Amino acid sequence: MMEKIIMKLAVIYHSETENTKQAAEWIADGMNEVSGVEARAFSIEKVDEDFVKEAKGIVVGSPSYMAQMTPQIHNWLFEKAGELEFPGKMGGAFATEQYTHGGGTQVIQSILTIEMVKGMLCYSGGMACGKPVIHLGPVGVNNNMEKFNGMGNYKEYFNIYGKRFAQKAVETFNKI
Image (cartoon, rainbow, N blue to C red; front, side):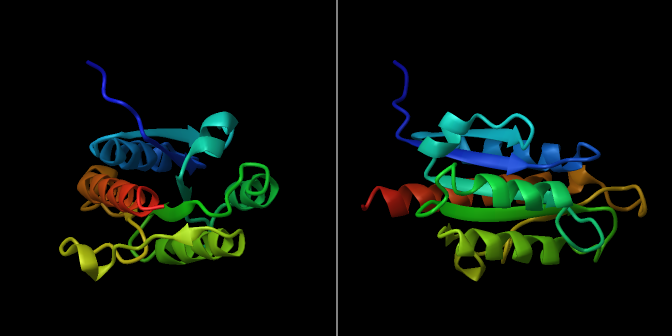
């Protein structure tokens, strides 16, 4: 018998090198580990708008570009947040960067700020979820600049973040 889907969650991203796309898919995989959740990842070029409107939570991701989100994700957020009914949804963020300390945390903070201004309830498991502690959202570092890094080293963090986000969304919205 098929499990009833009770909550949709979306991961929306812009990706230049496929690293952010991979991170988005890992987050969605973690979300889908939670019973009753259907999570899907979308590039900003191919968003299923009906799915996103029905979603109770949206996690937005961007590569770091000069320690900022890319202009593409910034413009997309300003153009689409209203029509995709962001207010009242749970929001989250993630980033990828080319090298350690490449601005990923700044990207996440910028995305979370826009989400708050758009009326979203922003998620952070922070220390409450235990280790690994993921304060604002996960950041992955590819191996273009530093051979000891590589996106594969961060898969678990993105997956855990997705699972925690989904668990909190289910807990929050099933009480309402």
